[in-house]
Amino acid sequence: MESLLESDKTDIEMDLEDSESPERELQQMPKHIVLPLIIRHVILSSFQLQFYGLNSVASNLSELTNTPNKNLPSSELAELLHLGSAAKEFDYEEEVQVVTTAVDDDDDDEIEGLILDTSKSTVSKQPPQYTTHFVTHHHSACLTASFSLDGKYIATGSADKSIKLVDVSRIKLMKSDGESGIKPVIRTYYGNSSPITDVQFHPNNRILASCSSPELGSGMSTSYIHLYDLHSTSKNNVKSIKCADSVVASFAFHPSGDFLVAGGDNGIRMWDVKRGILVGGVPGVEGENINCVRYATQGNVFAACTSSGNISFHDTLSGTTLNTIKKAHSGYSVSTIKFSKNGRYLLSVGRDSKGRLWDLNIGKCVREYEGATIKNNNVGITFASNEDFVVSSDETNGTVVCWDTRTGDLLRKFTGHTDKIRTIASSPTDSAFMTCCDDFRAPMHTRSLLKKNKKI
Image (cartoon, rainbow, N blue to C red; front, side, top):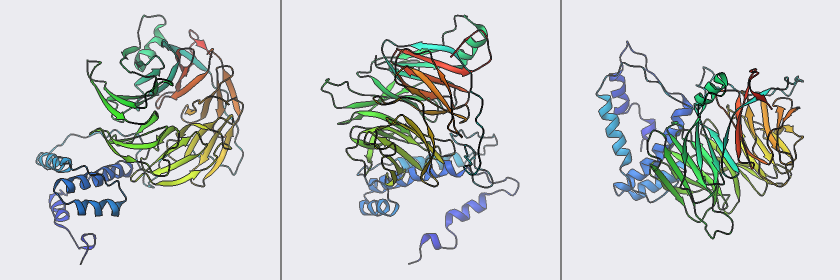
């Protein structure tokens, strides 16, 4: 029997040809946006087939595409097709701006970003000067922070079970206005029953999400991922995903925003964000204690690091383990991971007191960042200032440690905190980062020459 993929032309293709106008160039979305949409609609196709009672066909589709086969009949795909068909009847002349988390594909289908040339020596950059422009305070240890993808907001989470939302534009006004009375914290969310372990913004920049972890000795074994509508005037407009029998330490949104992965003391699970349902567990890491999960910007893969010292890479579609760096930090627990913008490199930090940069094209560590003591606590590591620098912390004295990304040279240590720094979050748009510390404080540090403000 002739395959549909091998036929000369389908009715759909003929309709598209007839509808194209010679005066209007056909516009296309870039590949890194289209692929996640394909993944979502393959899964929705399986749900739609189940809705029609075609369970065996849905099972064959899941097996063929290596996607999760869940008994979740849904008419969502038919609803989306109806909306798309209705929209096609209108002729929109206005330009549609696509917001994405990655750089658009160029003619060579490559994304710009960090590139290390190991064939020649590189001179380190001058040590950067950072200025503390704003500090937000919690009533207990500040554990986590994250910037929105457009760089307009920061969220901080604390052991006091609260989340603060900070407007970056107000911080910038403070820079030029001194003690102006401007208050960058625009909202504080309460109501969590446990300390906040991670905060992330949805790719559409309209939703803030957090996960909370039950305290030791509380007798609780269930975590929640809460989603807050930033455009709502009510602080109580919250949707929750219940993660039963799992203490969630970290989670990440897929760049499409349709799915998220959550990791904790019981491996990794994948969730459908819109429907708030569990898609499935990720094979190969069942029972592992996951410290951090993150997607590559292109959305085709996500990575996880574990207390057992491994870093694993998983296919976005099926969750299948693609590769594992075993004993990535000499067998010590790996605290945090961070993909470079172009997805070629992965930054990690472990309790061997080292940061490491992995070239994923060759599967090897190409740089080490030494000079900070990290033995007993999970700490953060990230790129800063357009990936020119790597920043982490020293658990013994509360200092921020800065290295040259390309050479691995230690450039500076910044003081200012009085306790352990838990997380460092870097702005995607500005040369700035925020540190979260056990001293209850979360300062924002910006590269600046202003003399009014205190330098660290």
